[in-house]
Length: 256
Length: 309
Image 1 (cartoon, rainbow over the protein chains, first blue to last red):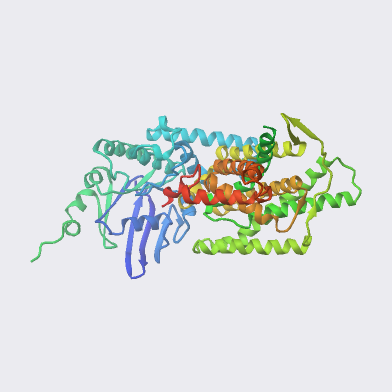
Image 2 (image 1 turned 90 degrees about the vertical axis):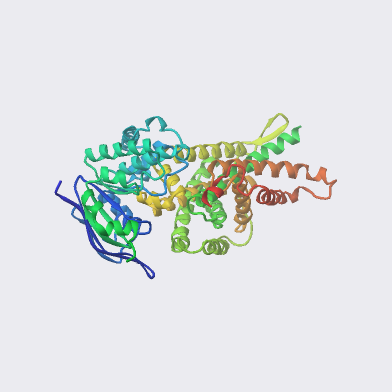
């Protein structure tokens, strides 16, 4: 539990005049569930995009599993072992659930174009393995019976699960989930919580953005709080909950 | 009845060719929302290279059956067109990937003009006759005539379309192509090499285009440096009719347009009391284009417009 998996420090990201992230640093340890909270517009998703390579930070350091990932492209980040889901679901809507997960394995598969066209024995074996793994992942997140359904026809909760299955298909060491419980009812949220605990138990570290404070307090090992692009607190849930700066950021401070 | 059947057969032949070309337009549009107006020229160059190859072989006194000669010519033309499609994308479109959509569109028209002129420098400004190497006997079916060539065109077109469907629906490459078409950013995140997928799309579309070009030249017994313009516009119309970006739509649109055009031109003389003859057949394609654009811009099988908005 003490090995550092991901470490960023001094991360700055500006959009024109907006200083979206200023000197943000944090470390995520192997095997933990690390939460990221903060009011709307605090820079949580921006930080997420930096950590998954969608945004290139202006300054800072970013190492993951011993590799330098500062200003690296998304596909390099995925290959290094960070997979993500999106706040607004971004599935391949017109492909089946199974195919969505199969595409997720692209980064780890080797068959080239000609192998795929000519159907060499090696390509066929890999294709069979990809299909089997995709089926297993759908079962893992609990939607095996929806495999042939088009992604856009799945229920909202199932789409969230499918996004997680697709992210897991890239064989990540760190799974980054951007508001996975948004719009879910209490039952679905509870199921999701169990799924995340199962994923962690299977050795995948989780980074989580979520608004549902109750869920976060019960699930996360450590939490960082962002406000106006700065990290204002970090620690175990109880510490964070009683931190005056966090209460101020969330509730405002009484005028004197 | 036999006129109807005859025009139906002719329409099916021409329609299969339109469909093959329309697939090239629609695949590229599906992946990168670009109308590749240079696609017609790739079709033309496929036809020209084949004719040149066959003439060279004949000139060297090679003794081979006609269909074999044709096959050799075709096998020379396909790689040329594939390379051309690949190179056009790399040189003309890739630098404009992030430019406003009008820029690559105008570039496409520019590439089309350049290729026409280059073809004219190489092959001259006259019609190039297709060498008479193919059997000309006709089969009579229910009062309508059909040649071996026409049968071969329909069969080959169907085989190629079937192969393409298989590629897109069942292989890893096809899965990556569909993923890229639906969400390039996320596809990248899944390790799909989007540049590679775009290149493959151009290469596959160009190969189909080259085959279609040879079919056109063989069917009409001639080729010309400007032939890509009209056939390209018609195939584009077919792609729009089926719903641009939709593979099945391109096939349906192509065959439908071929039949509409053929039946229309067959009966146009009778309908207008001889005022307009069958040489007005080109108007049908464009009337269809206008009707589709006015009443159903997303095409018969299209649905992507709303989805992308």
